[in-house]
Length: 117
Image 1 (cartoon, helix red, strand yellow):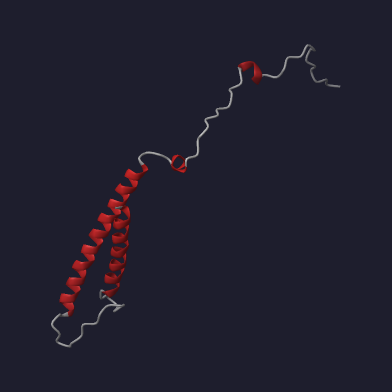
Image 2 (tube, helix red, strand yellow; image 1 turned 30 degrees about the vertical axis):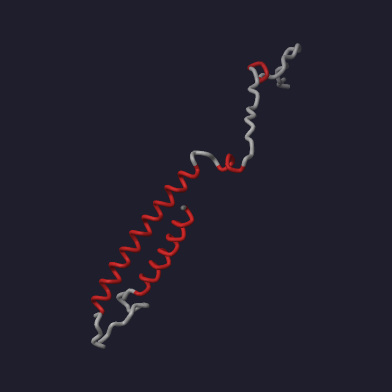
């Protein structure tokens, strides 16, 4: 199922790119020129058709994006990548030293104060 949605998603992406490139921009761009020939489809009619087609491809692209996200979430099922690899995790917590281990060792000698000679 995921592969089918992914293929549809890629086809929609390519179609969306193509339709956007075919549209007439303000500066001419890669748009189809609709000058004069008196054809059955006017440049204005072609523009609205391409606009509607762009919106349809965009909505379908967003829908497949959301669908792929939902499918990926269901496949993960809350597990981590390490769980999927099959590597066992060992939980080794370092031993916490006791309060006496944190202090320096006691000495029997009296502490010597620095001398001011």
